[in-house]
Length: 69
Length: 318
Image (cartoon, rainbow over all chains, first blue to last red; front, side, top):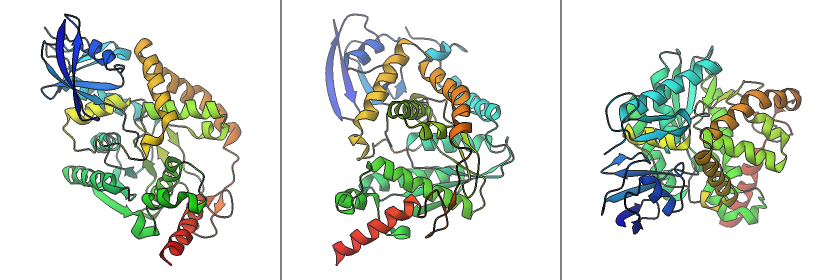
């Protein structure tokens, strides 16, 4: 199992999420209750492809796409 | 180990499932710009137009639209003029206008800011506050839409523009189609189009982002480092039905990549033209008795809101 930090940009809160070894970005997205169309996940200010493998203790920003304006 | 771009050896930053592509930052920006240009060409969106008003709220969609249109305006030979409406929604409007201005200045584009409160005597915050007292039953997003459409059309007519371009994206189109089908509003279905021609005192309406998803406009704005307001309109939070439709269409899209584009495309290209010819082409407009803008009744919807709000605000101050 690995642990990562997910900063939810709109809610302005950080969650510690536990996932299986070799978990990918898409697994984090699903664990947080989103689909790949709902959010953009960034690391070091760069968006990530959903197939990228997550890093142990990595810090990820989760940016919901919908603006509803 | 990272996922490579389908066109070069750089690291991919997004996967476009519907196109079966992984793209790096450079190739994603190029891909969106090419698609945008193709959508305009294929649908002849700006044919015989020399001046187009771009409605810029300051959010990701309208800011992306402004930059994409600025890029293609030389190729398609038209001038663009930005229009931002200050709706008077607390901090949200202040932040949005600031972002819109930054983009106009970045691109050195002519623009106009119309303040609803100064120009017409009421704000969207006023409507929300006095909605019940004023007897306004429609949802605030619907009222806000009426106000924006009226001001955009009036301004475009005043400056002799041929069209108003708005940042409605693929997700908006999917929602409009679904909700109009759900509620059986055939008139509304007939109006949903990527291009609505000018008629009577309406300028043409163009939605060049109709086949570009919300995720793609956000990615484009992030990668190009465009200033935009990421906040959500405080009144949009009340739209539960809209949220469910958006979530459901995204679940379907994840499982059936390309579903949203196909759904919108089939409706816009195959179904809408039939509905349009039956339900809208015969519609007769006349001038509003108060402002002279188009309406199907005696008084246009905007003047009704303005008059109601004028009375309520006057009573409240008195």
